[in-house]
Amino acid sequence: MEDRIINTSNGSPETNSSPQADSSVLKVWGGHTLEGNVTISGAKNSALVLLAGALLCSGDCRIRNVPRLADISRMGEVLSALGVRLKRDGNIIDINASEITTSKAPYELVTQLRASFFAIGALLARLGEAQMPLPGGCAIGARPVDLHVRGLQAMGAEVQIEHGICNARVTDGSRRLKGAKIYLDFPSVGATETLIMAATLAEGETIIENAAREPEVVDLANFCISMGAKIEGAGTSKIVINGVPKLHSTDYNVIPDRIEAGTFLLAGAITRSDLILSPVLPEHLMPVIAKLEEIGVPVIEEASDTLRIKPAEILKATDIETLPHPGFPTDMQAPFMSLLAVAQGDSIINETVFENRLRHASELNRLGADIRVKGNSAFVRGVPELSGAPVEGTDLRAAAAMVVAALAASGETTIKGLQYLDRGYDRLDLKLQKIGAKIERVENTEADTSATVTEISTDTSNGTASISS
Image (cartoon, rainbow, N blue to C red; front, side):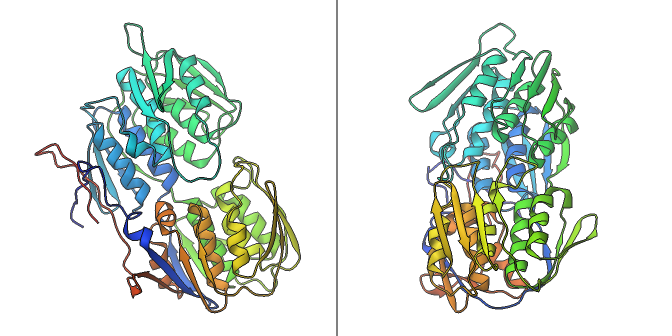
């Protein structure tokens, strides 16, 4: 695949979340059994932070298995605006951050993508200063950056937030952060990742207590280690980083996306299908697999990187409470609600991570589900069948929940809100088509089953960046 260019110069980049995805819909004709092999893409939440982590290296970095997503495109635009050179070829992105030209990230981009804020740790480590707008993203509840800020302050940074901008700088002559002991009040993934990046080039030892344990945190640590960082304990609640003066080039593979894999497991479960998923890391999916087995869905580990889901005789109700890893992931809560909507009996879902992440319940009720929401809990009474209707994805995982439900609903379902879906799923509709789903992306009432693929790179001849699909 030839390299294509990202363009941020006009201030209105065309990504696969706008404007096409805003005006297009998915039409799904449910009730069809799925069958075949599903290739799982690289992890969105890992790839985003690895791109930010590449700022730590003054040489070339190659990141493989990068999914084609709107969020990846946006992160590429943020890095390009900082002076980073990027080139994409297929699922490989080559990055050169040898000449960062500014420490100020563009407001209009960072406010669209929360993960881009995490680059503040890498920028501060490399340059001794950073100006980062407060982040945006899906409207699933408050996700403040106070843990990030307090951790950076403990490492010697002066941090002020004014007019929606987080200004951070190291004031001493060395311009280097200092190692510190940091306790996180909550095991925040973003704060843990920000502080890992900041600590890799800091003077001395940094200890992060009550750190997030998610696989994406481990992937970032391994990525930094591959560049020469000294990090121990990633994947546990205590991470120890001994700063080094400089990091070197690397060639690194992003881990498979556990949330995409979980979504396909649910698609197989709700359609009572036989599917094979690879590559996956089964240990990353244990909470999801455990709940599927409670419901009565057999999940078989056929190889170290392969899972097979078999049809269930009966879908039984179960209760779910979202928790930080290794608990049940909040990102799987919405798609799992679709499955519980057709399970026999009453289920309770408690969302403990975000306070505004049950809005998809009312959309599932449009399909005939019987769900009541009180506070951060959803009470799901299983129904024999869902029926097609117009629905909308209210955030990324809610949009995936609509797709999962539509696969089992009788008749036709029309799904809006694809600007959210395309942020986190690499050509989900095309992957489903390949295994037998009757699903079609429609633009202005005309079928358009081609996924919009964004390629990123930088034109080093004129210093501009552009985007094309």
